[in-house]
Amino acid sequence: MRVVFMGTPEFSVPVLEALAAAHEVICVYSQPPRPAGRGKKDRPSPVQAKAEALGLPVRHPVSLKGAEAQADFAALDADVAVVVAYGLILPRAVLDAPRHGCVNIHASLLPRWRGAAPIHRAIMAGDAQTGICIMQMEAGLDTGPVLMREALEIGAEETTGDLHDRLSGLGARMILDALAGLPGLVPEVQPEAGVTYAAKIDKAEARIDWARPAVEVDRQIRGLSPFPGAWCEIAGERVKILRSRLGAGQGAPGATGPGFTVACGAGAIEVLEAQREGKRPMPAAEVLRGLTLPARLD
Image (tube, rainbow, N blue to C red):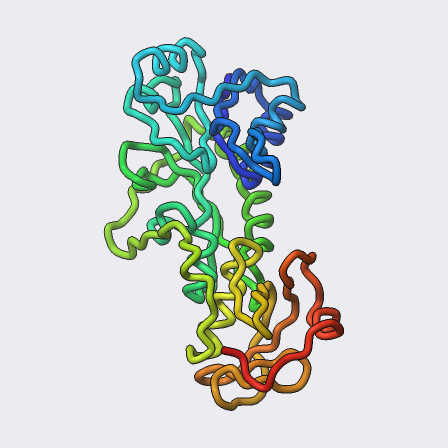
């Protein structure tokens, strides 16, 4: 098939690789390069970098609302557009241009967790399952009919980073199956019941409140790892807590115990991995070799 691919972050890269190996990717759309790094030089998105490495043409319009941008898209004469975390709203003229329309790979079991941060929100909410939906796109936010879905169990100690990689691989496999059977797939209209929205993560959500129950703190830590990273202050230093599990013991919120165990409002968590300012992520035992825990964390 003649495929237009539209995506931006690392999550989208395995899908692009799979499509490029199986179909004719005639153009790649991605967000424009953004300032990054210490020098704040423009850096291409992960998708643009991969597309260029594969020798594929790349476009990065700031908007697709203009008549010229829409005409350029229609002129590609695509069979289908595959959209994965692209980051721009697709106007009706773009949605209707490919012969089979635009299909989206969404990292949740729709209608649960429509929106920007479905992986983070699933872990933070304590969901037992998530998955991938291949959806026929329409004008609403993740409201289109589902063409294919597959569920994954969320592990008890799994982070957003872990789940991100598993879902990205699953999406890459499923889109090939979806395109192979596209004319025969029966669209499943999303039910009105069970709709939830995965709001973009706000960095203000990242500070740990040890007065909350341990189960909620553990979900916060795993759901915000690796980015932006849940954090607390230890001896005046901001330390990101990147991996945890429910631990034994109890005490006043913030009280520290054996190893890197911290009491919460109910129960306790055991920190497995953390990152000090200006340092790489390290196992808890290695962090403690250079950092003395106070009797209580704020």
